[in-house]
Structures are given as C-alpha cells and as structure tokens.
Amino acid sequence: MLEKRCQVDTIYLDFVKAFDKVSHDLLLVKLHNFGIKGNLLRWFKNYLSGRFQRVTVHGVTSQPLPLLSGIPQGSILGPILFLIYINNLPDSVSQVTAVSVFADDTKCHRAVRNHQDREILQSDLNNITNWCQDWRMDLNKSKCGVLQFTRYLQPTINQYTLVDIPVKPLTCVKDLG
Image 1 (cartoon, helix red, strand yellow):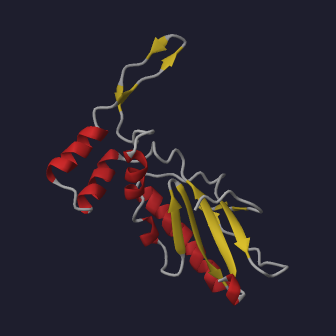
Image 2 (cartoon, rainbow, N blue to C red; image 1 turned 180 degrees about the horizontal axis):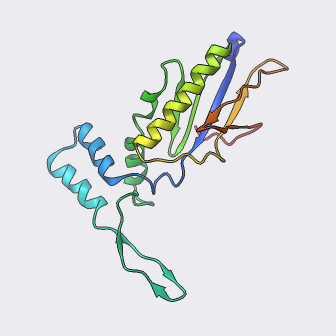
Image 3 (cartoon, rainbow, N blue to C red; image 1 turned 120 degrees about the vertical axis):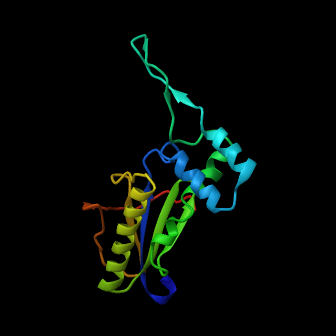
C-alpha cells in the first residue's frame, strides 16, 4: 500500500485480561460451531468447568466461587482456545480493512486516501466494539493506539475513537505480528 503512495492507518488493540475474560459458555458454542461435538466437546466442557477461585486478605479466605470465564494459562491449549474464541472478530470489519491477530495482540489497518476511508475504518472500530460487547470482551482503551504509516513528510492525522474515547496517536510500537 505504501508503494502506491497511500497512507496506512493501523489501530493497535489491547484486550483487558484477554485470557481471563473468555466466557466458557460462549467458547463451547464456538467449539460446537467449529464441528467439535460429542465426547470431545464434553472433554472441553470438563476441562473448563469445575474450577474455583477464592481470595485471602489479612489471613481471611473467602468461600470458593466457580469460574465462569477464563482459559487456564500456561497450558498448550490456552492460546489455541483464545484464537478460536476471537476467530470471528475479522468478520466484523469491512473487506478492505485487514485484521491481524498474534496471541492476544490484535491490529486492524487499511489504506486511508480520503475522508471516506477514515470513516470506514472508524465504522470498523465501532463494529469491533460491538463484537467485544457481544462476546463479553473488553478493550483497554488507554492501551489502544493508532500509528500512521506514510511516505509523506506531512501525514494526514486522522482521529479515531473507541466508545467516544479518542484513540491515542503512537510514534512507535512493539509489533509482534
């Protein structure tokens, strides 16, 4: 895109406690929709259920509470289950906007030649916000940012928002994929 002398706006997204927020019920629905049924689906249900948490403060421990969300971290399955969970996120954006996912690092980008392209990318961000609500995920809006790639000396500074909160401009980012 840069070869065609276009500016590319890239929005870097950060999920709040990404692995902890994955709903067990919704993940099981997605696994079923992927064709996992019968004993294997029951195995996943058993793998995710029956987990409890409790808190100890000043020597006093709470009663155990069942965990209804969260993927066991440190497991081989954890990242795979997370990717299955967010696999349909790219379906929420327009065809020209690209979504890249590496573990829990997500970015979307598109060429922005004019105001209409900027509006489409903003609409895609709104759709991603709606996807997050539907799938019980939250974006850490203070950690999300926009980076503009261009060959122009004076790039067009486009403003984007996530739920009416401005997406902060970035000058550098650690991009894992």
